[in-house]
Length: 133
Image (cartoon, rainbow, N blue to C red):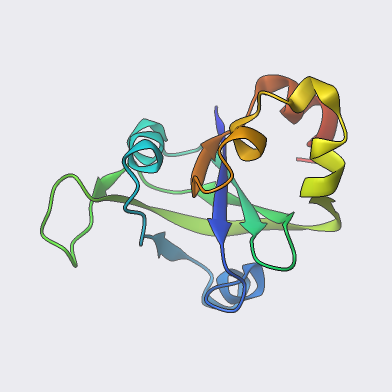
């Protein structure tokens, strides 16, 4: 199983919106590197929902419930999406500030490629921060 950061602007679609909807199609990604990450995700992987903007924190976890597939709204096979459902909202969100303050995560794409909307999560980060999952 792999873990992925899934970034969203909370005013557009928040973790609470995902809980309300019970599931959604994770779409709207156009960056080539982020699309590669979407295509590398698999059913059963975990998405960490990261609120961008003023919040800048991982707010909760979601289960990826489908393998990637072409976005049916766009008709372009390169524009991949997958389905997600909520797993758990974190009692204590993980802030970007907290992640950046730990030098062992200096190479983490969340830190190095701040504009990337879907990011692979290093195994060490999973061990350090996600034991509750």
